[in-house]
Length: 321
Image (tube, rainbow, N blue to C red; front, top):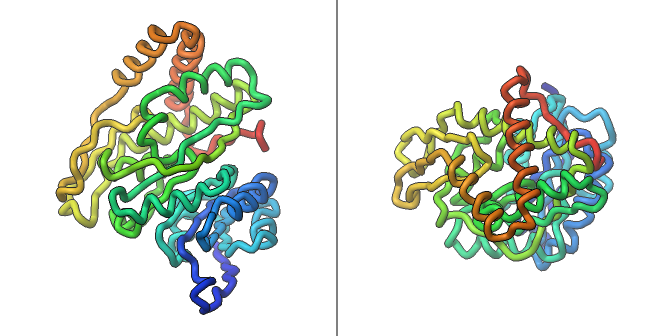
């Protein structure tokens, strides 16, 4: 693995010192990264963000786009989001620390609100509310996200899906990002429900344009969740080194025990909870029955695809790039 770093010096005047760090792992994201970085100016509010873009295994102009936007750039020869997150952490200097996917757009003020939420001290991890951009998406994709957006774990307490932040105390929960696909789910499941929260503002996720690309994205999710389910994670600080067995058969958060008391959180299978939520949604809002059916079919198909796949290679939505 080759590594090079372009570090732009931060001037010593108090007004220019970063008040938070934003780590952006990016693999061949030259077409989307510029929009993401440009949005950070208005998203920052009164904050002074230190933006670290980790271009990993890129064959395009991702690093050049990041430099042109004034970001601090770390380049890795290896295409690996986990390695990029670790390198970004090493380069970043400030807290709160935000981890942002290269294709996510934050709305004005959102980054500032996220930093404020984490500084209160009542939560250790947080994320803004999500908004799906369905313009140009086919009917099955729109139907899937109509149901998905109504599920409890999306509407409240979700940390991830493209952006999340941690306080310094939250980040100290683990030593470094493990080699897993679902870093956001890994982070979410380190914290009990009362330790994570939602901040004001929104982040925009461009939904796949067609069913084929939706299945690729959901297969990646299913693969990442299954990968986590086979892994035992250890809370190295504050949980006495006790193992945390994560059952990630769903991309939902199960009930988590009170890790604030010094005990590692525990997780339970949540398939029945999702099924129950979909049934209630269809009964209370019959017009969403087709959406619930599409969601169920896509979820089943993606899990079958994930089981058949021998590789954990990144499954990318190419329809929005």
